[in-house]
Structures are given as structure tokens and as C-alpha cells.
Length: 112
Length: 111
Image (cartoon, each protein chain N blue to C red):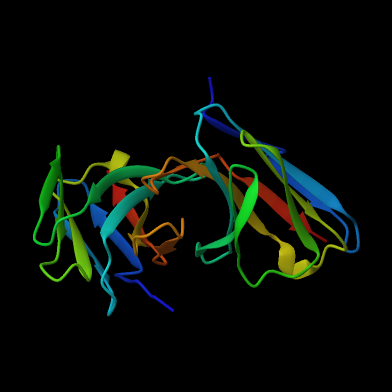
């Protein structure tokens, strides 16, 4: 069974601070996705990283896929209250099994 | 125009009852899913259908029965509801890239 460990589980910071969330596994994934879930809503895709060592930027969010494609990180610069939510990473092991493995998420609260 | 819509949004019922949650997607995706999110926010796949054919059936009790009348719809019927079934159930769909579009969730509370 493939597992994805996310850390930290909870993170509460002040507006303007920087933060990094981690997603680690002992398994190799063909790609890894990051989702953000707001209260009362379903997860929404932020980014997909595919190549080992890949770095993608989405405004103040920077996503990195580890060289060995076993881990990923999400860095947020100058966090804002609108960044508050549950951040989920999900690994795709490839093939046609149509199955993603989700981490347990990092619940981020950005206080004004 | 909601891409993945599921109903009802909230469902409160007694133990032992039978209930259904419906899901529809207008994205033209071939694959649809049911996920369960527990109180600790852990998202776990239950079922997946591709073109109306069941392709993933995780270790879910037989009381849960999915049904896909066509590739745009995937419903979930639950028999003999138990307290432990209380959770948020998410429907999702995807194209071949395995990138999921989720519905807004259906919060089931079993009393």
C-alpha cells in the first residue's frame, strides 16, 4: 500500500509569514498533485508536478517535486487569510488504475 | 454551471435507514469516483467507474452500492446505515490524466 505522509498536520500563522508544507513517501509516483480544500467545499486542484526536480510557481505558491519523485513540498510566500484551507497532496502511481493516493492533509490557518 | 454536482448537500438520518446520494458531471469525463472524508479530513477512495464499468472497489462494506446509469452519473446507495458511516462523501470525475474535479460534498450524519 502506498502512503503519503504530510507535515505538519496543523499550521497556524500570521498574515505575511512564509511557510512550507511537506509530502513524503517511500514510493515513487509518476506525478503528484496538490489540492486545496476550503470549508464546505470539495478539493480543488492547484498544480500537478510530473518530472523529478520540477519546480512550479503559482503566484505566491511554489511547488517542488523531489528528484526521486517520492516527495514534494509546497512553499507559500507572504501568506494571506485567503490561503486558509486544507492542503492535500495526492500521488499518481501511473498506469490505468485510476487511483490516487491522498495524504492526510495540512490544515493551514492564516490569521489577519 | 456546476461541473460536478451532488445531492443532497446535507443528510441527517437514523441508524438502520437506507439513503442515496446522487452525482452528475457535465465535463464529459469518462471516469467517476466516490470518496469518503472522515472527521480527521482523511480522503479515501471507495469506488471508481470508467464508462459505467466498475474499476475500483476498495474494502467497502456491501451495504454501499454504487450505480452508474450512464457515464455522466454515479449514485451511491447505502443500506442499513451505521453511526460509523457519518462522514462527508465526495463525488469526483476525471479525464484520462487522473486529475480530479470534485463535487462540493454530501455531509451524512447518522444518529
